[in-house]
Length: 345
Figure 1 (cartoon, rainbow, N blue to C red):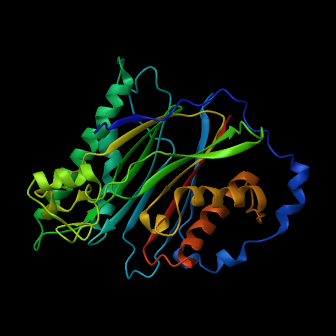
Figure 2: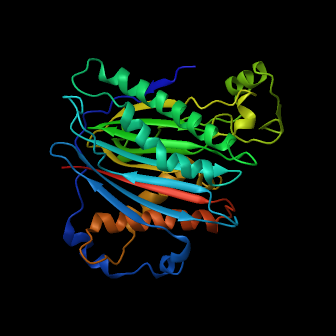
């Protein structure tokens, strides 16, 4: 299986023309009071980074506990990773991640607290050749090390922890996105392209991650070769994912912590990246989720916070409403949504 899939290069189409402020100015006055009533279950954050010449990445997050007794998801928004001795050809790093825990919240919390520190310690430094190859190796080594560190800690407990977690991590190296993922959380990119038939601009949803569950042929074969079994679509009839951080009791059965990697060059046609756990995708397809966000961005109105830009207000509202809609549609799982808007300076 090729772990190093690259997305197609963006076309050289002009960036979409921004809506005129006067066309939408009158729409700013309506509120989003329906979401405000759910603030106790909604964690919202906004992080920004814009280095000269690169796309500005702004992260928004909304989390819902759903019907679960415990919130087992974790997330990280680090728009400006500080690191000494960056390679000479790199000007900025940004990192966004969502972790969906199972069997407890300890694996997801551990990954959220530690994975990016391990990433920074292993990231190429100084003058290097073949940066792309080194970044990929860094991500693979980081996931392996994070898994080993958690399993060591988990096995030392009395009784041993049995927690596990998915991981979907987006690392921006200047204007190149690297997405590393394990399990069934996902990342998708909204890219605007010109329709050949009508000439109008339309959104193309591009997958930035690959789902890992034991019903997939390659995953099932690996599990069976390791002596494990797949029953009712689960490893040993219990575990829903075939790759994860933690889950020590299943590692001998072919469950691994090797992520799939995708690389994507950003372009002015790119609008946002959506990262979310399977609590969202149980009730939304990737296309439906992207179209829902676009519907809010293009047609809805919000009441802006003091000092908040129109774009930030719309993305924050879209993030909130998408998570709320997943719960309304019947997702009983934890739901965590991260929206990363893309705007070239």
